[in-house]
Amino acid sequence: MIIGAVEEGKYIAKSKRLGSYSLKDYDKLWKIFDLYDEVWITPYIAAEVSNLIDLHGEAGVKAYGIAKEVFSMLKQVDSSIAKDCENDFYIDFGLTDGSIIQLSEKFDVLTNDKRMLGPLYKVGGENVIPYLPVSSLSR
Image (tube, rainbow, N blue to C red):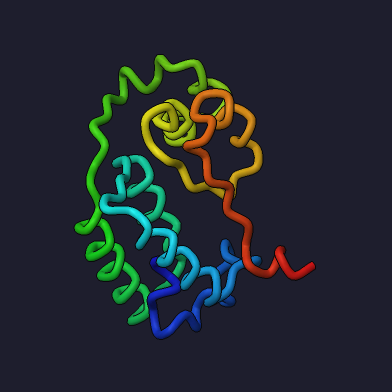
């Protein structure tokens, strides 16, 4: 969503990490966000998003500014690194994904990570929202 917001999405196709995504995905994600009164984020996700911005120069400056703006609109989930390392999913999925799986018990979770879907459904059931890139829907 961050890279999609820079210069009307022109960097989506140029990003090394967003090959299967398009401006339609950017628009679709905002429509999903609009369905909620509150959207929550963990500090781990914010750190990963910040670290995954692969734009440089003026585009990078814009992306980090947009990230700051988006982060300020979100509510922050209370987290504890020590506690999150103790959940059943830490070893197999790491800190960020393990905590997301655990949080799916209380929060809706939007993800495109197929590897996480089994544990997410086991813990979160109807709180899990799988995301498929728009391009994959037309195949």
